[in-house]
Image: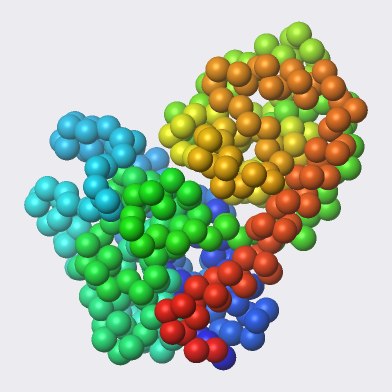
Length: 360
């Protein structure tokens, strides 16, 4: 039996919940520690409620403004390097150290209370320790524990890999294909999801309903999606549901009303994420942008590949050929169950464990 600990700023899209279930299903112990509560209201395990950090506008907006006006750079621009490294100005590093002084008593208390030094495998989500000097991860590494860093997108693209963590990591993982081209040691792992928790749709409803959800309009291309779908409401009588910054439970209930889901249509991020997994699990036809590299990586995919230039054209093909939708809906569910259900994904994770010498 293994004891596995995940440490993450937040349970961003509920992924930590699925990992916990997957490990426990295989007879292992798993806990996860988050620094603050997720914006989407996903379940918490050990939440530290650390101050001066949150997935809330009061924290995010000033942070982005600082990057734009003080660092003089686009906060969404990808950093150079292979891998790109986190190397902010000294004044920023000092702010991190000051914040960590406030955090340390809370972290130390949690370590004692929950026995956080007594695990075998440590997953550091976003490649981040509690401290930027990686002192906790280094301590566990010195005791012979396995250190795993997982990256999810902006952590590597826009922040950069934290050097102290990168030096001691035994395994680096990602579910974002583009990141595998930005780090020499990064391994790909399909994002886990509880696909079987949902009863899929078999046939489209009337009127045909299209849905799009976002927390970042720029990255998703949401303004163009809204424009096109509002035009189709007028011309073809479809119903359009737009969801923005809503609690996860409400998002799911609204998605259940849809037949077609649009994830994203820009090249800011390749492919698809948790929004698509939810839609596919519900048996929806899912529209997203896949560049040629991604499409070659998953040639058996069920997605409708669309970008900004051809979104309307691709939606019209679906709307005007409703007889084809049931087969597409069935393909959505079959593919996501095979590729992404956590009961299957954890088997691949354990193969990675074995490659770094973890003994079951």
